[in-house]
Image (cartoon, rainbow, N blue to C red; front, side, top):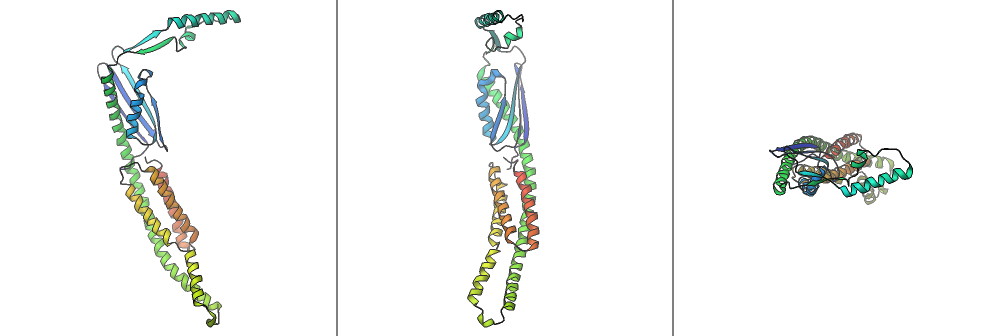
Length: 293
């Protein structure tokens, strides 16, 4: 199934001790790009969180917010490095004296130094807390996935409609091409015969050779066959369970290339009109698949 790269999902767990909340939002991106924001005291769990998200999402730009609120006593302690603090104060006093400054040493000047105050994480009942946190994340990812799937189904519907229109256009091009090729041959022979009065000097083999070259120059048989093949492959991809956004992007480029070739080869105004419409439909699909994982 198709999954959109644009989504949002969240989940919250609450017990007597703490409240855990995950929020995820994403937009399209060529690669997997995760911006994880979590309390500094939980930094040791970030690798596990990243791995869990990476298993569920192959590419997108993702913002993940983890919030933990302790409803009773916070298990973290704040410690003061008194040895560093004394040295720091002494250094500030020396600077003031050396430069003859009258400025007061304020509390904010002291606590702004990370070495003075530090958060010491006590026991979170680690195994239990980690299991609950990862379970909360999985449920948030489930909600996140639900929205991706819904958006993906909408994209699939639109892409199928455009593919159907493209296929119908290829049918029209094929029909016109078959008719105008025969007409082109007849017109060529007629003009050739008019130019040469003495039919006895006509070299039939040479004529056939030149005609074959001329027809081949404007032939679009191969392009039509490849267009049908690309459309069939595209429809198969729409039912894939894999992340196929990149493959679709490559395939739509090939379809655009075939359409350009048809436009450059044909001398038929009706095919040219259809070809222009074709490129517009292909561009719509190209824009749509930019949001597919």
